[in-house]
Length: 137
Length: 41
Image (cartoon, rainbow over all chains, first blue to last red; front, side, top):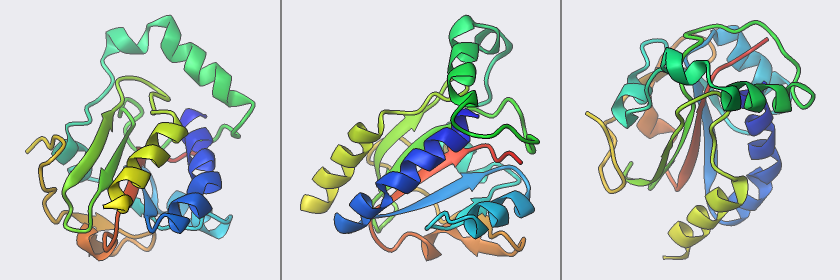
């Protein structure tokens, strides 16, 4: 599953982010028990739930359009991740696109990636570089 | 509102894993990476 695969990458990168003075959060519009399970299974940062998609709307991260959903690269991303993260029950809106935002302590948006399809996340190295630049100042 | 780089995100209410509403500002006290995802399982 592309989202859990990326979450796993974020978990691996977390010590590096912490060393740079940053932290991480996971936010989804799925079920509370799933957020709890992720934290119980070792996610070293809070997993929150956004049932009304307030954060998604504020960031302009939209739902995946049917046309985009049907494109081959969407399913290539999905299939690439299947071996890396165990599939399970999807809760929340199955067409919600993913994204990543980096916020300053005053909630200023330093970086924003709006995904347009399943698994559309930026490379982790790019994210670490954003954090490195932000925390250098 | 649709944030772009440089905008300030409003202090939104999210929920913790117990279903309690929590302002996002409580979690953002230093540079913070947020993954917006879908939960499975």
